[in-house]
Amino acid sequence: MNFEQILQRAKDGDEWAFEQIFMMYRPLLLKQAIGDQGLDEDLYQELSRTLYACIQKFTI
Image (cartoon, rainbow, N blue to C red; front, side):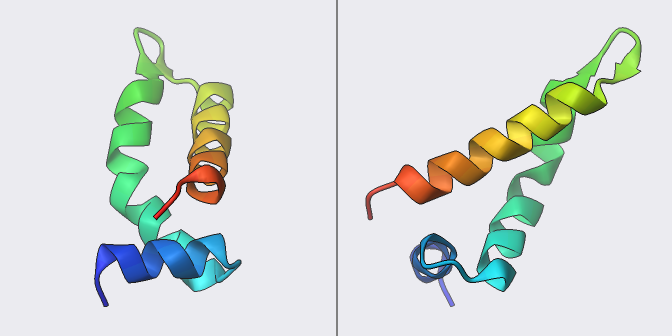
């Protein structure tokens, strides 16, 4: 299954597909949420919510 198919399934509410996309982008989310004092869990959660919103709004 290619990325476009997984993205469409995620947009349609498939939790497995969303999890696949989330796992692809998790390293980037973690990298962006780590600061001088370690992992900012609130920022990580906000970035995760933003990824979810982007998946929902993305036009294929």
